[in-house]
Length: 64
Image (cartoon, rainbow, N blue to C red; front, top):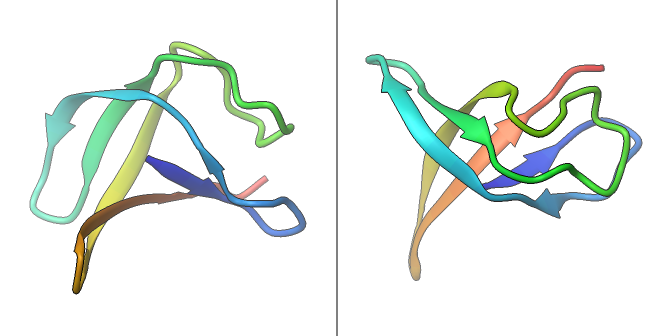
């Protein structure tokens, strides 16, 4: 999953999907982000798939 937050560079992290709703997927963060997104290893984070020509991009926008 690629995480985004205003003022920080996008960062790829490992997540294990643990829940699915009609609007969002949720996963457990499996590693500590290098930047201060305000989330940490083992936190539950929501993310969405974005369809691209070359496949899917899994994206989480984190408001700090």
